Length: 171
Image (cartoon, rainbow, N blue to C red; front, side):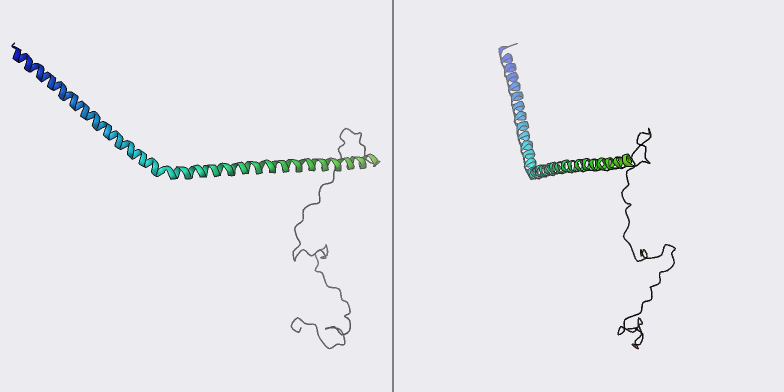
């Protein structure tokens, strides 16, 4: 092989290596440009969604504040319920004490029996409001109530001797 051939081979190899390096650098530059563009698009999308994120953050904070208020109200309600329960229990104890005192005084009640338990009075049953058919003056036997006859005073409509009749159509 001659020197010329060796020089040509070396030059061709150097050119091929240089071309490969140039292609690699171009591909790398193109890839970097594509990544920059993709990063820019993602930043734009994130910027477009940012107000929604801020709104949802504010909504979450409001919901958390509402939940805290509800927890505090529930705690206060539980405290009121506990106080009411304690008051009720104290009142029941006072009533039972009164019944025990009455039973102690009553000669017909044997408090020393094993099965003794004070019989506390029950609360009066709840009643519904009276309506037109629930007239408390209605006789127990269910017969219709008749208005009692009373002599009218002279000078009142329908009174004897006044000449006026008491009739629904004549007022």
